[in-house]
Length: 191
Ligand SMILES: C[S@@+](CC[C@H](N)C(=O)[O-])C[C@H]1O[C@@H](n2cnc3c(N)ncnc32)[C@H](O)[C@@H]1O
Image (cartoon, rainbow, N blue to C red; front, side, top):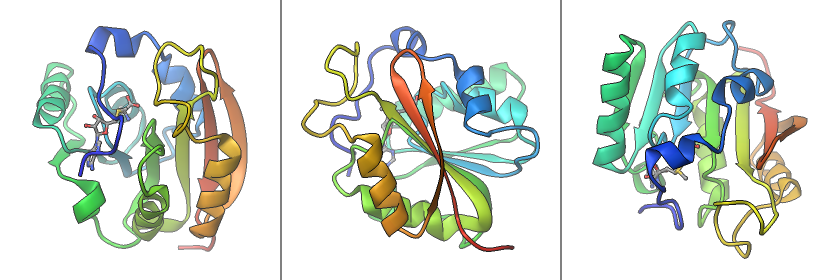
């Protein structure tokens, strides 16, 4: 089941809302990170730059064939061979990844899902202990040029509460100007 209000504007417009390299750096996605999963990769706005930074595989999951094809095409153009695209419904089928198998989980612009706790629990399951989860979302400001309706747009405090209830430890909050906030969590324990 596609997450409500998760359709995208055109690729060029979407790209204008972010400075992906800057955001990835703030969100602790650096060259020390190995395997990454992105839940709902869209056009690959973050998938492509993150694949250039990390030392492992980037699992890019999306329910839309068009999005998966676009990410594969961009990876090919940029000669990136560490992106694994997965055409998959993570709401109904989960990520399909093994327990404790990835080093970073990206939930970018997706936690307005009907059941955000289920996504967080799935991210928790597949993360290795001690590793990070990054959440970014649109600021709770009706003036932002896009973003889910205010009635379902999660506030940072709400995301923090859901994540803690799912087992995560809250680490940091960032202002990802001009339109987003970022939250970094870790999965307690050691590998
Ligand atoms: C708002 S976009 C965010 C894309 C990307 N994370 C970004 O920030 O640029 C959400 C993406 O999640 C995908 N999506 C929605 N529901 C999904 C589901 N149940 N399983 C897999 N992908 C899903 C949509 O097709 C869309 O590409």
